[in-house]
Image 1 (cartoon, rainbow, N blue to C red):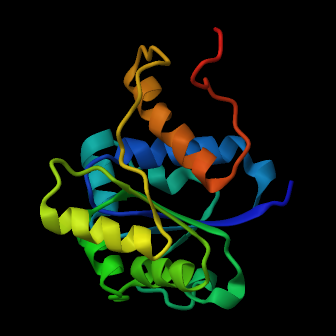
Image 2: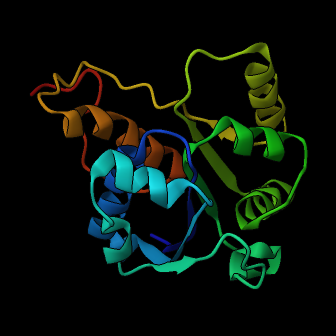
Image 3: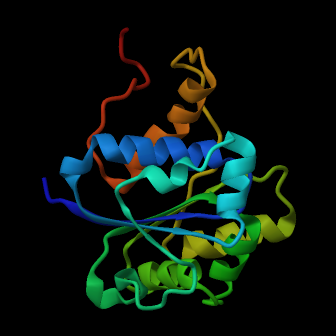
Length: 189
């Protein structure tokens, strides 16, 4: 299997647990990664600390870039990153991407992924959706992005919050093309 170059963006939407468990899972499949870069939006760290009660986002071995670092390799298509996952993705970030506004590293990297026809996976955690949200998701989908709402499944019979969140995280990793162990629909226990 070819190792992937991946960008993970964490925005200021509620749902930091999705980002944490995604980063935890990526740590366990590091043999499938060539490079990984992480970028937090202006509010993402603050919301992580509020929701999770820790600053554990600083403990990962992956390189963290600031939101205004346009010298990050994934700010250009020539760096050949294959996948970008924005988790959680705020509706503000989603709207800026849908309208081609590249005002920070997250939106610039997303623009790069779309123009290079690479995988862009957005994980919105908002609800309910307004018509503006739905139209922005439609625009991104038509441009080649993947909208993967943080909507858990329950056929795995989750027992903990982590189990519930991991139903979404595992789906994100499937969409990104990683080989992971997870319960699949129709499989026997």
